[in-house]
Length: 467
Ligand SMILES: [Zn+2]
Image (cartoon, rainbow, N blue to C red; front, side):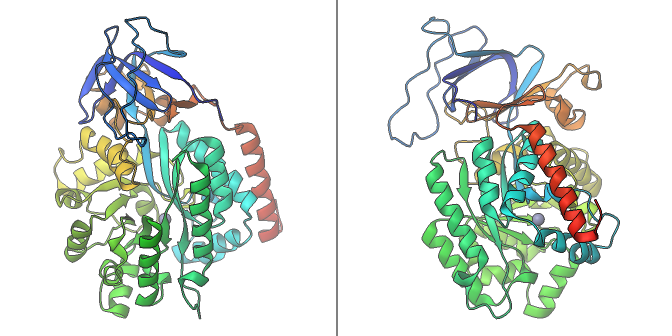
């Protein structure tokens, strides 16, 4: 981990304000992990009081004033020709699945799952998940993601990678009902979630958060398990992650078996009394959207994975119009095959324009909201997700100088419709620069690449007798 920076100044940079408005020639001053002021470049910048609640209860000290020359920040970054945005939130991921990126392609979904993915996952160790997670985290940091929500197993390896890298994450161990199970407390997911609760408590930074997770309706037992998990979430004050109505087959089979949709089934168990982030929602019906709106369920839209697995296109504009909070997610790299939020945002917009016949839907300001503020809220991080005094200093910087971006009329249009993630030149989390100009400050990327290649070779040998 790079040492905690005491102060950092982005000088003379353009940025997107809380509603997506463009603010040019600004200085952003950061003290420790928070933005303390944003003002016109060169002017006195400390007028804005910190907006977010201070956990200690008091008001935070105003920043050292640059114009007053109290002191110069420890680091100064020249923002000429650059655009600062809040970092991206990836609200649905299975980060160690980077290890399976591209493995078993070209097979029907069930064959791929049962003959490739599950046998590979059965061989994974905590150590493998640690290296796979670091690989995914490096990819996310380089692509401007500052926080992700994850559902997987072998969570100690993932938590270790999160802590060491300095990224934020809401981690969970996905629950499935085993045949003959006595109850939730008997499950591996219960143990894994307990571990995460403890790990988050020990970490103290607030970056690592423990969530509960239900894998999906088709791997779930009867209502009793739902009531137990709801009770557990209440006792431990947890949020919930879940896959919901991803495929038509899953959605219709649930209606045939349980007489209601997956959303209605889990709601009848009381599960959605817990703040919930539901992934996919491709096949949600009107009645499901009523439940989403009533319970405040957030939806993680994963357009690349949904298209690649031929699951369909979620009616996102309709869901947004219902006032339901929509976020973006990549899903795992085995079904994507990247962890690239910028690509998800671009595709989400194009799909909804095509679906609705309206070129004005999911415009750049709305995409910024989906990718940043909505994700932060859905993760329970009220002091993250926008560039304002008092908020956590989670900032990414785009270089707008490349030929494929010029000339620039509206920088947000350039970001969401012309830029690649390679145009991101800096990623800061909680005031620490974790990625800059192709270099990682908290991850030894050469070692991560060597270890993940080694794991690939070992697993292939054990599965197929070849390297
Ligand atoms: Zn998933």
